[in-house]
Length: 389
Ligand code: NZQ
Ligand code: MN
Image 1 (cartoon, rainbow, N blue to C red):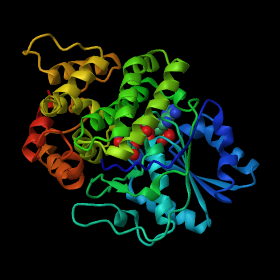
Image 2 (image 1 turned 90 degrees about the vertical axis):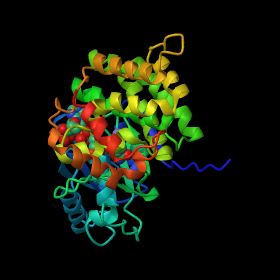
Image 3 (image 1 turned 45 degrees about the vertical axis):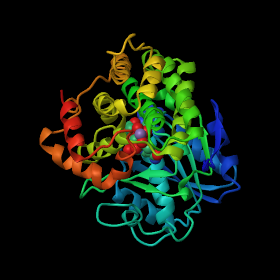
Image 4 (image 1 turned 120 degrees about the vertical axis):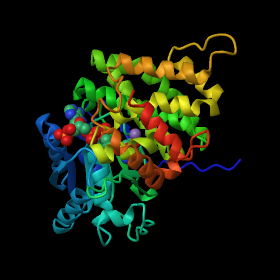
């Protein structure tokens, strides 16, 4: 046995615990920059609550607002300048995965020379090593899906090339993540569904990956069960228990992603949201069924297990392919949460398929290759085609 297990995030979970932000941050710094999105956190009062909590614990705190969905290199570089000019010594990410990832990029660039793109692995170069430790990072997620609160990744889009790879370093783990389900409880239906599917995809892809990890395995099963049981309820009724369970599933999916790294559905989605600016979870929803039909034959027992978790019993006898049962289960889940979408539905253009496949192989090739069947560029082209139907 040869195992590494390193997910060093202090996770603080519970309703109302945003109020503890100041206490959690006080030992880590004196001058906090709170990185957030375009307006939801301000509108819902959570930004003020965060700033007040920090100030009540004696910190100087300022907000840096405006993170776009699928955060860009320019936004991160601008944030790093703001952090330097304000002599910030602590970065807090408050918002969806985009704000959390921008916070991670800003923490790196506030302490290291050059723009964030230097530190990302892109098509034509390896990443520059991060020489100086990033500023300490704390997160307060407001969506339940990306798992950024427990991963060492920041997904950043280059607005010129539309490449969307990840900045990856163990130095990007948050020192602490305060998961207060009051925040994601305010998500509208469609965002709840899309981010919930993101959590499902993390757990499902890691579970079926060739890079399967024994600790991740347990997290994956628990997260998939939570999605099967609670996502539709979280979307439809917005009830507290269901929203709590999804927030917790997101953190587990993230911890699993930190260990296993996902596989081809994510590898194929990043170019989609990089080029067309779609919501990450909706891109995953459009790609999941065709991906499962492609790689499910490489993991029939696991596909059957996932099918059962989703309430889809593979028919008796040899003729029912477990991959097919699994795909049906996922389609039923997507239907239930209103995300039975094609790539066309979310604004992707067919003429871009060749480019998407190339980008997936170039910028996310390692992730694609963790699929349980051998997968090359031509397979990706076919799967993108199928995801238009
Ligand atoms: O910008 P604001 O006004 O805050 O509005 C946001 C945004 O418009 C809104 N929102 C967030 N929380 C809300 C809310 N609205 C109402 N109530 C709330 N509680 O939702 C919109 C989308 O936000 P965004 O942060 O973009 O969504 P999500 O959390 O899905 O994050 C997606 C990003 O995370 C990356 C994705 O690629 C994408 O860039 N990922 C990051 C990962 C990681 N760091 O480990 C792994 C994931 O696989 C994923 O790739
Ligand atoms: Mn994801």
